[in-house]
Image (cartoon, rainbow over the protein chains, first blue to last red):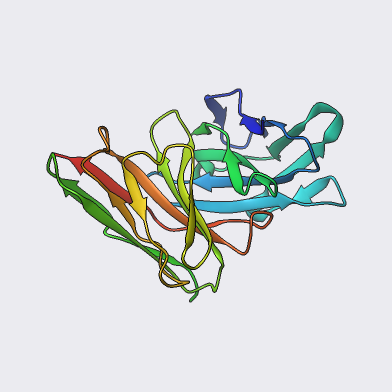
Length: 113
Length: 112
């Protein structure tokens, strides 16, 4: 069965520090992978997506993610975090066979000055 | 501007009442979805629809109903059979299941 795991429920980083949010997926075929960000009380906004090709994908707001098939991972990174990056981050996989998206439980990011 | 509009933003329901959450999109997307979000549980799929007049149950469909009479509209009814309806509800749409989903701003439903 398809699933997405975000092992870190909450992460705190200092402003200006680097960030890596982990995502592992379980999927039998080539996955379609996404990272979304959610501010409190708001909907989800797409940060980036991976469908095929270059395994390092660039997104909005200076985020990037790397697809590693051997590790079934799609970790999100940012070299220097800004206070405005504080939010909830969700990893998701799209399933053509399952006809739906599978979301992780999210990672809450706190940024301290 | 194209997008997804959910209304109302906040909704209060009395015990035993049915309530309907609205979701409208002008992105010309075929697929639409309803998710429920509870703290620490991520997004759980309630219902989805790939085309007009067709929809399928998701993982937590009990106590909910939907309709898809128009391509741009996918309303969700929370019935009195839903025992714990207090949650944040998100509507989304996409071209298909292998394209990104676009989300509305959500409706927070509270039972009073």
